[in-house]
Length: 128
Figure 1: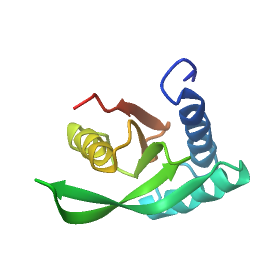
Figure 2: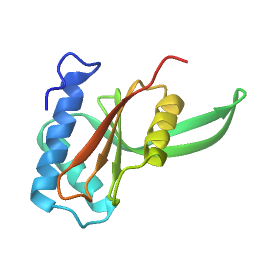
Figure 3: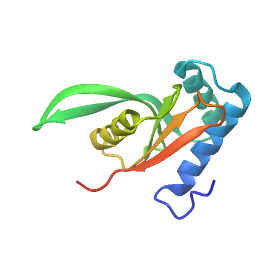
Figure 4: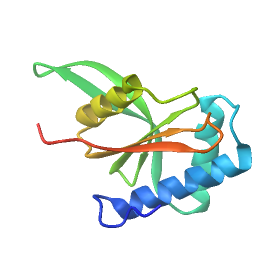
């Protein structure tokens, strides 16, 4: 795990480390909400600033049509979407990319706790 040299690499490395600690302690098998609570606890223990269920607006042709809540935003720069599913698919990846667009954020982590080893994907929003 070496995120150095990547956009917000120092932050994503800490988040991934926190997720690994959560997975090491809880293992697979819990609901997503349990992992969200554990991640919040771990980030707090590490003194890493975060927000849970931050509301992000979705605009259509300049009109806000809907708000949605992402699982975590860390240091107001990295969106974190947590999953407890059999396997990450293109659907979850597209979801995070859409969340990045809506939240005007550049970097997202998609983390899946349901597999025997922690699985994560680092996603970077390309410019427009």
